[in-house]
Length: 199
Image (cartoon, rainbow, N blue to C red; front, side):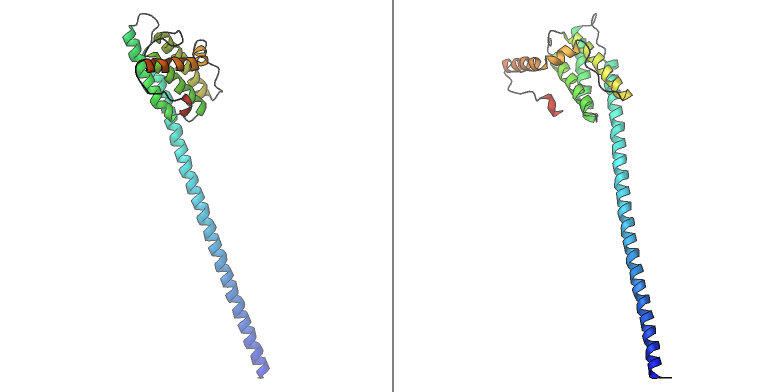
């Protein structure tokens, strides 16, 4: 055998071995990329599952809030006639407490704002007439307004305009707030009622 043939065979073997090594390195790199992509996909799926669980929990809590708000009106009756003023004030106060707490769990911003507004007006009404309406009238109107809003929410409909009477209270809210703030100052209080927009 000649030296040239031996060298050629050896070079051919080395080239084959080098090609195989390069192929293995490429396959190893592709496997690393595939593992990295699989890990990223798994992390995205896990994050999405956590977000989905959180959203479902918040939506479930929102349903409970709506149920509690509606129950507050059932459990604390407000009658326009034949109910002592003290009973009306107690019912309105309990309803107001429920609205004030549960509105925090309402995800729909417009509904949350409208419920906060109802609570705000009820709270003022516990201290006397509001916009020319007695506490019993304010409580009665708030019940009808709340039921209308919750019904629209449950059906997935747009929120309608306020019912007659409640719409008047909403339109005169700025004046109601000024009168309430004046009453607080006359009582020697320095507290300023925060705007509804914070809710």
